[in-house]
Amino acid sequence: MKLRLMSDVLSETKIKFVLKTKLFGKRIYAFWSIGSTNDFAYRLAMQGEDEGALVIAEQQERGRGRKARVWDSQFGKGLWLSVILRPDLPSSNAGLIPYLAGVSVSRAVEDLTGLQPEMKWPNDVMLNNMKCCGVLSEVNFKNGKIDFIILGIGINVNHEAGEWSDEIDKIATSLRIEKNERLERADLLAEILFQLEQAYDDVKKNGFGQLLDQWKKRCPVFQQNITILQEDKKISGTFINLDEKGCLLLKGEDGKIKKIVAGDLLV
Ligand code: BT5
Image 1 (cartoon, rainbow, N blue to C red):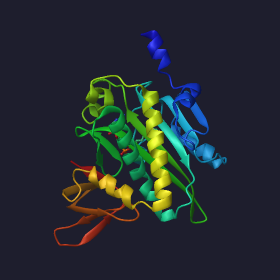
Image 2 (image 1 turned 120 degrees about the vertical axis):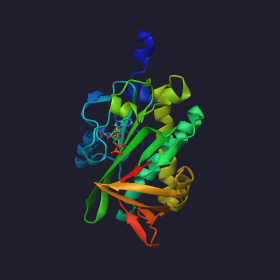
Image 3 (image 1 turned 90 degrees about the vertical axis):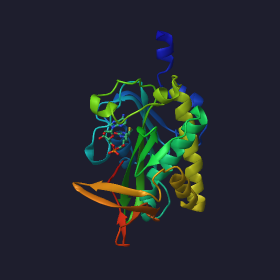
Image 4 (image 1 turned 45 degrees about the vertical axis):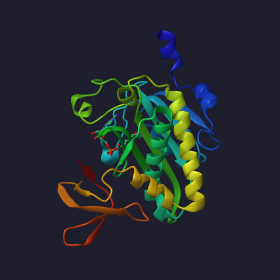
């Protein structure tokens, strides 16, 4: 047991050994414990770190979601990682990066486990209607262009039921819970970065159209009636499309189309 646990640690050497990417993981910053991988990657990027650098930790003490929400990042249970992107893309494309992450994680999970993740707008990957992965994409602009994007991904891998607080336990799941077996986090990491690199190369060459189609195919409420919560306001309508900036287009009962930039989908 002890040996197995030790070998599960995601050291730089172990990560290098399993990676099958050229760009992502070119530099690896692997931590036992860190505040937030996104914060660390942001500082690195500000200091000029190249695209492709990977920051990963066994545990985050201050893992973050959107709007400073807490992201539960228990030691050794999941993948808590951030990568630095410096895409030569129009700044209007920045809001599409979370979709890139969602589809890539979903493909990796599908390939390794046979499970079929679903997308929940804007940035969740779900299994059985429970959240197994969240994405936090943070952009820094310079002279009106994208300087860098920190793409943070948190995925629950080897948690067992009851290992979160009561509040999170009600909405979260892990791959282990869904698949009923423990997973090798290193293999999943390698596959996620591989899928991410392929998808990233593809959108840089061909645009985001196909990627967004993939996302919509995996989203069970696409073209259905939904309700979105923004602060304390609820907006309902039909989820008719995603636009070229990644906004959700919602058609109200009055036939008018609203662009939703941010919010939380109520189920
Ligand atoms: C997210 O925010 O889902 C983005 C999460 C991104 C986490 C990664 S880990 C690596 C990198 N470094 C960071 O500091 N962050 C990124 P949001 O959509 O706002 O959802 C946050 C909500 O998800 C919380 O308010 C909880 O309700 C729930 N939650 C927290 N921890 C969870 C977990 N481990 N699994 C499932 N749900 C969780």
